[in-house]
Length: 264
Image 1: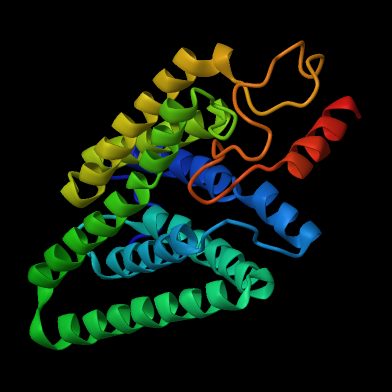
Image 2: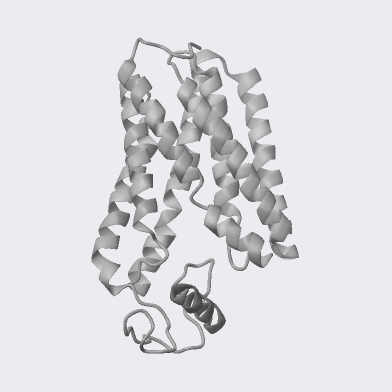
């Protein structure tokens, strides 16, 4: 595998740009885990996205290492970084999650890694050459579609709550830009396994940004005082509000804490 190939400079340029943007996207959950470490609790957050992302990065790493038909060094580097970062996220989650969530996460990881190792062994002994690459490539596509499908729950929440508070435009834009760069990278390499999931990623990213533009002026949440955030008024009862996501529930104490942060 050539590290810096000049055969396809456009593929190299978009791959390098994709590495930089993907690194920013990988760091997007840092504020979430800062909050987890500060409160020493995972609250309602789930570990599934991080475990699935870790397994996806591992599969793409293996795919890049065995695909000798194209220069996939940049695909190798970005997923190496992804494996390290996602491993840190999972470790932090296990450190602060309640017992039930820890058990579920451990079972999920054991199942995932067991499946990954089993696939490696089976593909090693039962397939050869291009057949192995094709099989692994489509498996990578499947995992990437699962990862890209994660924002669907957030989009559903935005439509239901008519609020984009938990879908920052910067993150949606970064995900879309990342999908575009890797889509172009795959096109220049003529690698359908890279192209297919990033087409879906691009479509979902555009839809997220469209929802943001539609609901950005209706970004309201539960409030106790009418002067908070420019006179916004409550839209539901003050007991609970499930606008965060299926993973997070905002209660009155949390609203008070956020209000204090805004005043500061």
